[in-house]
Image (cartoon, rainbow over all chains, first blue to last red; front, side, top):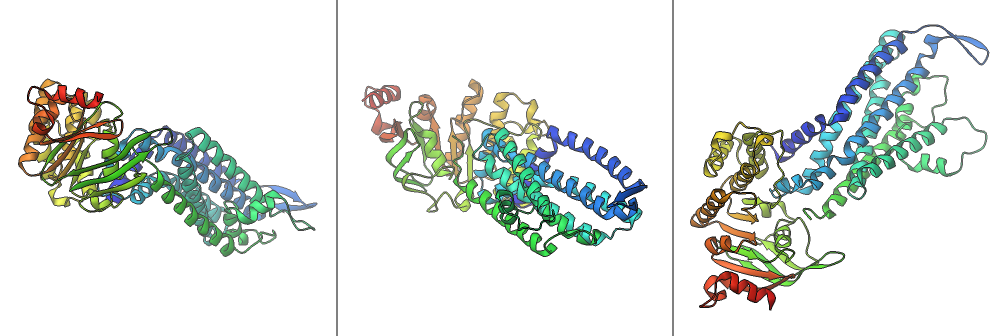
Length: 265
Length: 234
């Protein structure tokens, strides 16, 4: 077994033993029940004065559901990553592993893998169930859901890398609060970019939307053909590619920062 | 084998090591002696690549410690032994066998030999969380001895051991010397260093105040303790 595989396995066991995982399993169950109820309801709604069958709104409501779940996965990844590496430095357990012929990159990536695996499995269960039920009950195609799910996974990766990097410099609570604030601000900026405007959108949120990681925008853009009546902005490829660039930046930030950390003081 | 040349290590508020040079030849057992805060652990951390020198050069078998290959065939026993409590003794040794790059087919034999050597073969299936402090220290020795490393860095190796354990530890270090391993032992237990080391380097406030074989450092009518006090208080 390679050092990376062995360390990733250990990191996964450490992540599974965290108390938050029990809470995540409970939330998954509640979410699945909510998804089941959400996709099985029927009725009429009034849209711009016209009666519309709820089934016709499934694309929009399904997209909102999908993006909300995607952001929840990103939050979970950030919380898990906020001390998954730092804890090993604090208790000194990293020292024993790094006294072996193991590079710091391997160690940091293995810890990231352990934390991310829990978030991604949770994401796969929640988003997979939502996509399956929306497909079965409302006939929404699975292709966009797959792409949006992949974007949500990359968004979780971005949040985990930045949380892990911040944790090398900040206490755990400060890391978590910073990441939660960042995810909420990015999601707000991304969602506001879809509001129709006559004037070009300016201001700090607009700047953040253009330059920051499209945590919510990429999944929404991927689901564009679930919402043929809505203006969903840039093509899925554009925001998806931006998300991948942020993933590379996050990974580089983590590896460079971890190389500079002094161990065992 | 291990070499520090004109090494200075400064932290923000203090200088841990100041222009020190130290050579550890292949096959020798060298003791680092010094009061608390003298810089002994900093030397081990530099050799392991845990920290970078502010200036000077550190080499392990001619390689920079930042190169993971410099730690191939190296065993390390930290002063503060943190072991994953959920793992069994055997599980921990198999994990470290993976990290050390030992062939998978050889894990069982290597782990068994290491456990046998430190007297914990009967605790192989026990969870580490159930072990006493002394037994955990023995597990620490077992992981350091895994794969018969050519270099061993031992930081306060007898802390947490009872008198029998301390005697055993001295025997294990003597056995390492016999098989030709290069051993660097950091300790402030003078008797321990006196019994197991060929050479001693005495550190004080980040300086090597004396180094050499015991007969070179200890005067005719002195004990090592007398020489240590004389050199440290000079």
